[in-house]
Amino acid sequence: MYTVELNNVRKSFGTYVAVDDLSFKIAPGTMFGLLGPNGAGKTSTIRMMMGITMPDSGEVKMLGAPFTGSVLKRIGYLPEERGLYPKMKVIDQLVFIAELHGLSPAEARRRAQNWGERLEIAQAYPKKTNELSKGMQQKIQFISTLMHEPEFIIMDEPFSGLDPVNSRLLEDVLVDLCKQGRTVLFSTHRMDQVEKLCDNICLVNKGKAVLSGNLREIKKRYGHNRVQIAFDGQQNGHSLQGNPLASKVETNEGYISVELAPNASAQQLLKEVSAQSAISRFEVMEPSLEEIFIDVVGKTDA
Image 1 (cartoon, one colour):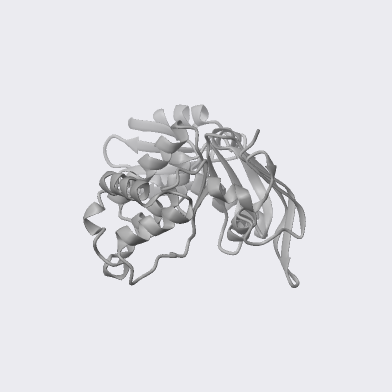
Image 2 (cartoon, rainbow, N blue to C red; image 1 turned 60 degrees about the vertical axis):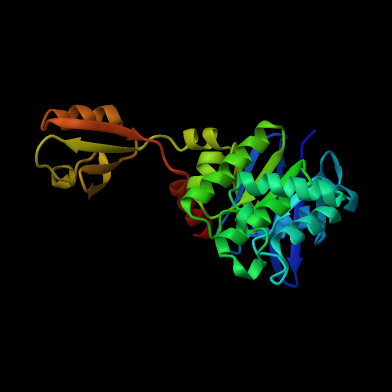
C-alpha cells in the first residue's frame, strides 16, 4: 500500500492548466520531495491531495483508498502561508488546534510542552503570535502540524524564515518521523535540503512531471562529468582552455572546475594534466540536484 498515489491528475483554472496528467507514488516511511520552479503546479497538487480542490480528471488515493474527508485526521499539513491567529497566545492556539484533531485539552497541553522543549521554543508559549519573529512563528506552525501525530505529513516550504540552527532542528525531527514509519512530503526551493533528506523526488514544470524517481539513481543517470583540480604552486585554468577533453573551464579560489567534453573521461584528463603539472587534488564531482534541476527545467522550457 502506498501512502499517496496520483494517477493522471489534471487541474485547470479557466484556460490555465495548473496540473497536467501528473502521476507519482509515495511509499510509507519515506521522505518525498515535490520540486519545481514558481508556478509549476506544486501547491495546486498539494491542495488536491488535501481535498481543498478536486481534480478535473484522474484519481487521488490517500493511505490506500480514494480520497475522502475522513482521512484528514491522519494527515498533518503545514501550508506555505502561515495560518496562525496573531492575537492569540501561542499555547492556547496549539491546544485549540490539537482539540480540533480530537485531543483532550490536557493531552494537547502535554504534547505542546514536549514539542516546545524539543524545538527550544517553550519560553514563547505565553506570548501572542504577533510578538514572535517569523522564524519562531514557523516553528509554532510546524508544531501545530504534528500535535495529532499524523501518519502523513505535508510540508510546503517548511524551512522558510529559519536560520541554519533551527533548520537543522526541523530536519532532525523529519528524519526521526520517517524512522518511526511516518511519510513526509515536502515542497521547497532549497535543493540542498532535498538532496540531504529525500529518498525520492518528482520535479514538475508547467504542470507536468519532467523528472521523477529515486534521487540516488537519478544522480547516477546524470553521470560524473565534472572534476575539480587543485595544483601545487601557482596555476590557473588557462592551460586547459581549448583542451578537447574540457568543454568548460572555470577558475575558482584555490582550484579549477572542469566540465568534461562528451565522451571524454576523467582518467584521460588526469593523465594529461598530471604530465604537465604537479596536482595536489583531483576530484570527480557528482552533479548536484541544483544543477540537475536547472538543466531539466531549462530543457523543458526551451
